[in-house]
Amino acid sequence: MQQIWLFLLSVLCLCLVFFCSAEEGLEFPNFDGKDRVLDINERNYKKALKRYDLLCLFYHEPVPANKGLQKRFQMTELVLELTAQVLENKDIAKKLGITKSFSHYYNASAVYIGLEEVGSLYVFKDDRVIEFDGELSSDTLVEFLLDVLEDPVEMINNAMELRAFERMEEDIRLIGYFKGEDSHYKAFQEASERFQPYIKFFATFDKSVAKHLSLKMNEVNFYEPFMEEPVILPGRPLSEMDIVEFVNQHRRATLRKLRAENMFETWEDDMDGIHIVAFAEEEDPDGYEFLEILKDVARDNTNNPELSIVWIDPDDFPLLTTYWEKTFKLDLFRPQIGVVNVTDADSVWLDMSNDEDLPTAEELEDWIEDVLSGRVNTEDDDESADNQENPDDYVTEDTDESHDPDDDDDDYSDD
Image 1: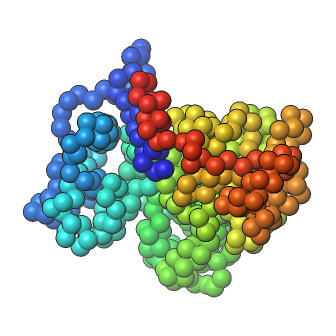
Image 2 (image 1 turned 90 degrees about the vertical axis):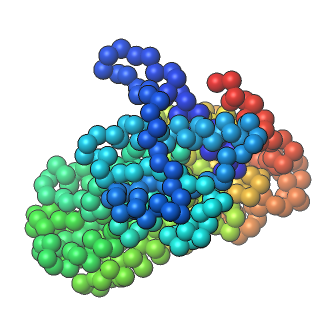
C-alpha cells in the first residue's frame, strides 16, 4: 500500500512543475533543468558528510528497465531537484546537500552509516540519521528540511509566544522551565535532538511563563495531542535518558492526526496489524462535530494504552481521497470510523448512514470496546456474514477482489 501512496503523492510534484502559470507574485517554482542533486557512492560519501551540516540522501534501487518504474523514479528525482532548487541560496546551500545513491554498490556503507530501507530518504545531521517518513513532494520535503535545520528547542519568552504554544493541540510537545542554558536545560536539549523534527520541544527561562503553565524549576510537561491537561514528567532534575524513555513510552497518542510530514511513520505504527481510522473534514460542520466527539472519547480513554485512533482529514490529502473511497467503499463527504487491516486493507466500518444524527461519545466507546475485544474483526468471515444479515450494525469491506494497485495507476496517469 505504501508504494501506491507514494506514486499518487508524487503526482503533486508534477502539478507544481508543469501547472504553474500565475501572475507575478504567485509563481510556483519551475524546475530550471540544472542538476543539483549529487550522486553519492562509497568513495565520496564521507566527503559529503563533512561538507554539509545537513545531508539529505535518497537511497534507492538501480534505475529499473521497466518504463513505468523509470517514470516513477524520474518523478522522485524531480521532487529532489525542485527541493534543492528552492532551497538554493547562499546561506542554506552551504549547510544542506541533497543526494541520491544506488543500493547495489552501497550496501556495506549503507549499513555502516545507518541506512536500513531501500526506497527511503534519510537526513544526516551531526551524529544522527533521521528517516523521512512523509509524503515525497517538494513542498513537504522543503518544510521538513527547514525544520531539521532549526534549533531543536524553541524558546517561549512572552505572552504572545505562549498563546501560540497553547493553540498547538494537534502536536505532541514538551516544555520545560530552566534557570538558563548552563543548567539542566542541556539534558533537555540533548533529548530534543533525538526526536527532531517530529516531536516539538519548547523551553522557557521566564518566571511569568512558567507560572502560567504551573511549571516548577527543572520541571517538564508533556502534552498529548487534543488533551486539555499535560502530564508532568516524574522526577527533578531530569536526565536526557529520563526524557527520552518517557517520550518513547507515550508518543503513540490516543488520538493522532495523519500528517503529510510523517504519514508513513504513523501508518506503520499500528496496533497488532490494525488501525482504528476516523475520516472527518474539520472545515465541514458534521466533520467538526464528529471530531469533537472523537476528542471527548480520547480524553476519557487517554490512560488506555491499547487505544489509538488515527484521524484523517480528507482535505489534507486530495490525491488520496478517491483511492480511499474506492478501497474502503466509503463516502468521505461524511464522517466515517472503522477498523483497517494494514496488511491487506480489509476493513470494518461503523454504520453511520443516519443522515440526522452522529454517534454519541458513549456509542463510539461501546463500538471501540468491541474492536479492542475482537468482537469487531476484519479477518472474521463469520462476522462479515452476520453483518450482511444485520446491516444496521457494521459495514465490512474485503478489498482483495475489488482493489488492484495497477488500476490506481491508470486512474491517475492522465492527470
